Image 1 (cartoon, rainbow, N blue to C red):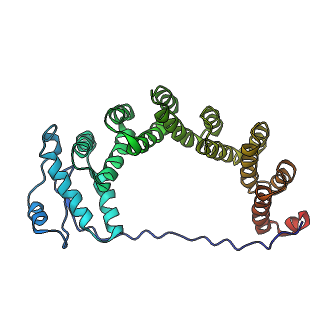
Image 2 (cartoon, helix red, strand yellow):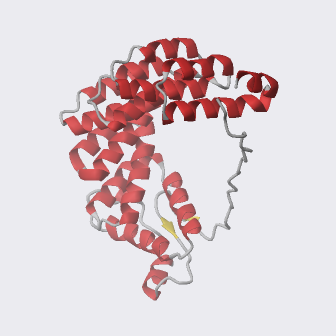
Length: 298
């Protein structure tokens, strides 16, 4: 079999440019920003000290304070700087103010930016008190925002207590909520316990997202126990899913044992694109460390 010449793998590093922070926190939860392009009304608001959200529970005055802050961020034309401000705003809101801030955002004017901030704060809350964050989300949110929030909560919860996260996800009454939360839990579990992630993923309703989760977990397993992962994958009855998983395992196995990985691809995969891609990937890595052995195998 004639394979293409190995490609040179170029690693591109992403450089994080740290912008000069032009603003500072006046109180724990909400921030006054100085932006030249802001309107006079916004600039007038900047001169006032933001109200402490702890005193704004249930009061409408909390919403304008948050909306002024977000409007100031939205007025910034540089997307990198706007993202920097959003990250800092979400990170520096005090733990005690998270629930108040999230509720104020829910009761205010819904914009893309306010939804973004709400999801960031919800994920932080889930890292502190996942049960409370989950309870609020199921009561107050709907649609795509609800699904994204539930997925984030599942990830945070599973990273701290996998069994409790699974129990919570399984008891969600709506099937969409349940499947979404379990899928996110499986992805998080795959980082440390891929076999448990597989057991969880195979119970989900059949869909492309489930197949991707199974493939991901099997790949994670193959990085530490490739023989066991391959033996498990060979038993998959769905031919399309089996080939997808075996191809991913072969590629992951190639870093540890290219001979076994290449043989798995040749012997267990049907001729076609998946097999070709798996073999090429294994050989391309192989020639970087053992070029003579790779050439002999080809």
